[in-house]
Length: 266
Image 1 (tube, rainbow, N blue to C red):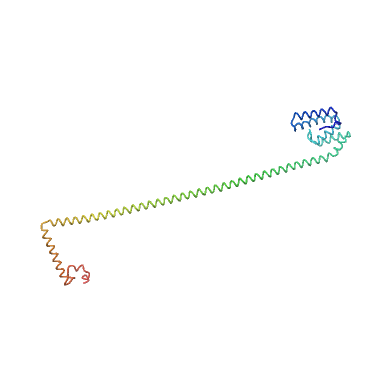
Image 2 (image 1 turned 180 degrees about the horizontal axis):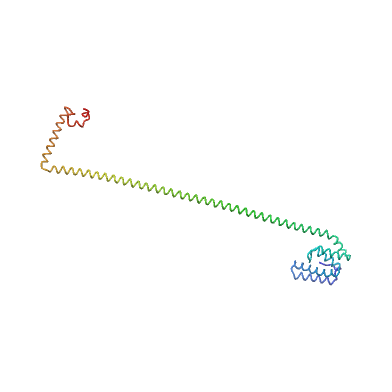
């Protein structure tokens, strides 16, 4: 900001201050400052073109610093030279030190650029590291899910195998139970058949006995049956008497000799 009343006439300084105050009140802080410097630059350029050495020096400063206008060292040297040609001491000194300042400014810009590049590289490295961490976590999560799914699948297969085994064992038990029931039924049937055969045999024997008894009873009731019976009994007693006598003399000559093992040898 120009405050030296020796450079500008009093009324011009007042006008610049009034414009700067008005712009500050009507616009935001950053925009107001930028617009004010543009106004100052335009005003200074007009004076510099009219041959004002102080204005020429100020325009050179504004080009060198990039205030109110884009930074341009070539134009800054030009305006410093114009003011120095008019024996402006400040312009002469600034013109001498301009190369060093240009070198310093460029170095600062390079450092700033290098710092920005470094920051960008660090940011890229951080982003790459974070990405690698996310990918690693994702791989671990997927691997854990794969293992979990494999365990669940193995468990399902094991349960299915156990279910099949239990089903086979149950079917085998049912088959054995059915075979035992079948064997029990067959055994009961055999026992029933054996009992029926025994019963039939008893009934048959009883029937024969009854028939024989009935036959004997019928024979007794026929005429002459008593005489026959007596004769039979007499013959039997005679045979017994003869047999006893024969046995006393020679047992092997009796009628019972055929039943004796000693007589068979003879």
